[in-house]
Length: 149
View (cartoon, rainbow, N blue to C red):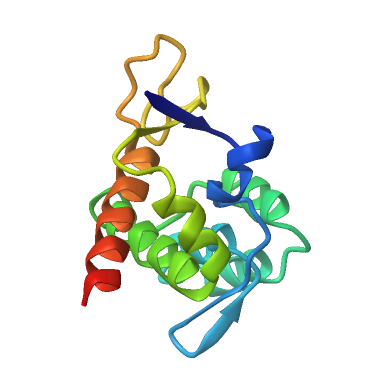
């Protein structure tokens, strides 16, 4: 079986980075994983803009602000997966109900059903990289190992 998730798919919407679950990373509180991720994109090139993203009212607003500006770190493509994985892991370690939800998926393949994004999601032809799904499956394995110890 395959589990598809997206911020609009009710049962699995909390897997989305747009879900409003604050996390603490690097000594700061972030309104969501999306806020942290989009902030990191700009922190080295435009700290004022990065702070505007950090203070955006909603995760969706943080993402929209980020998409309006392409003056982000030159090495962003090299580090973005690692940065997002760190934040997603923190989210699932912070909220026991989310941890249990993720663990309840067993060994099922997790797919971000975003047809508009062929990197994080499945893309319009269902042949995208599904990096968000892969991150969640990696985080699930980390949580499973932590639970055994």
